[in-house]
Image (cartoon, rainbow, N blue to C red; front, side, top):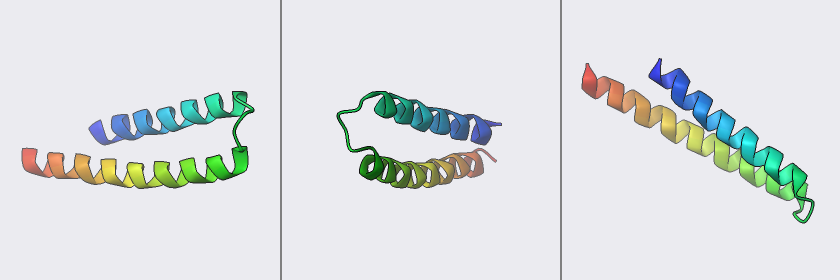
Length: 59
């Protein structure tokens, strides 16, 4: 359950940041979107590893 909660929070944060960037037209959307997706994927992988390590320690 914790894994789904943390991944949901992460995805929600990425979606919220993307929507705020779409509303702000001062930024180059294509380049920034690619950068954000790349950062989001790496952050998602790191958070999954961290959560799995914590779960392994608990058991």
